[in-house]
Image (cartoon, rainbow, N blue to C red; front, top):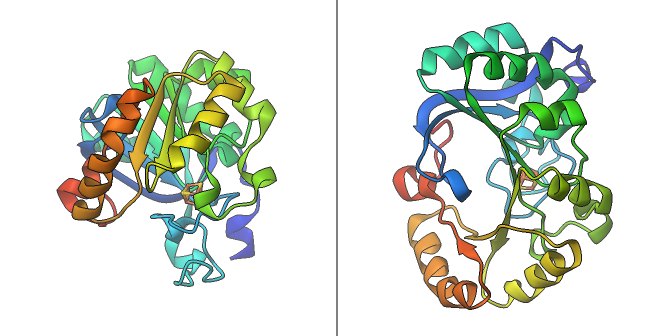
Length: 243
Ligand code: SF4
């Protein structure tokens, strides 16, 4: 297990799952046909995380997952074969926190660029992307975590990383909100770092919860001049893995 979680050579990635075709379920590309690469490991520990199986080896969120069954080290060439079999032209890299493995992602992303695939990376925005990675990515879907995530401030907000992502010109900002009062905290972060475009997404892993919270958030989000995103994968499939 220790070996599985140590830094990997540049041709290998620590993988949770590869799946597709499916839809991008959140943010500015919501509804686009794509494939997903979900990587293992995270530097945060959100109390409402819906992918705890990629990082929670201590049972902090209620279930103690086993990395030796949840994760695998895989050569990027094998991952590319699996992605091509999905039959899409867009890759979404999620996690966990994908930027923990940004160096090892480069060969895969170069291949995506060579064949004209669109690439989006989902990140919590706590790790600065390298110029090489930024060059190969079409969009960063950055989701800075609020106090409702349960992470301490210094862990969830990294000034340098937020500034680098905003200045890349490739970031959109997706804030997970439970209720309208959360938007006050979003406004502070948005204003401090000049973030745009801003999306607010209701927290939840059940369709009725997502719908109810989206309805409560809709008007306040409009009034602030922001965008609203739902979680299409939850509305379609519930809290299932690999869809
Ligand atoms: S940053 Fe994402 S993957 Fe990591 S704990 Fe938070 S929600 Fe889960």
